[in-house]
Length: 238
Figure 1 (cartoon, rainbow, N blue to C red):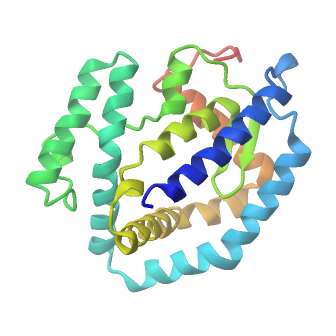
Figure 2 (figure 1 turned 90 degrees about the vertical axis):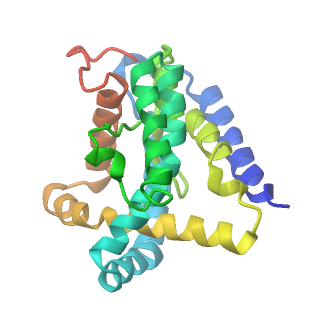
């Protein structure tokens, strides 16, 4: 059944979200990492999988494929993502941005040959970055505790709940032809990891504690995204 794997991932994420919400519904006292012991264990597991499998594959992918091809792959999957980026902007009340995102899909899916070429950006139609976790934040949901999700990496309780919807609405998961669906998911994963390779050196040089560095960078970036780059100075809950 074409949606069985999607349903399995959603079930696991729902269970994890329920456990997190029950166990640490509040991050009182400004402590955003009350699950640090658990998080570090999962972080080490994810890091091990990355070092042994994902990073070597991504490094080979980056070395073999020419830059224009990798850019085309990034654009193709970015065009798919723009559909729900637009929907999230609309859900957040940013009608102009949402219309622009959906306009990008229309332009890139046609003139850009299914999104392989980012014609919309060349036309001045801005690309945004939105997801359901950000939408929950704009609606006033508190971020909750920081958590590292197996395979998915750093999140907050709110972002983990948003991830459930991100996975459930991912168009790739609903492709009928199983080999095509699996190939698309695999290529997207490896391509995304390859795009992050330049950041590895920065993290290695800057971080005395890789876990803390990534946690703090993630939380700061998510806060900035939720407030569209204009987060209040006060460390208040979102």
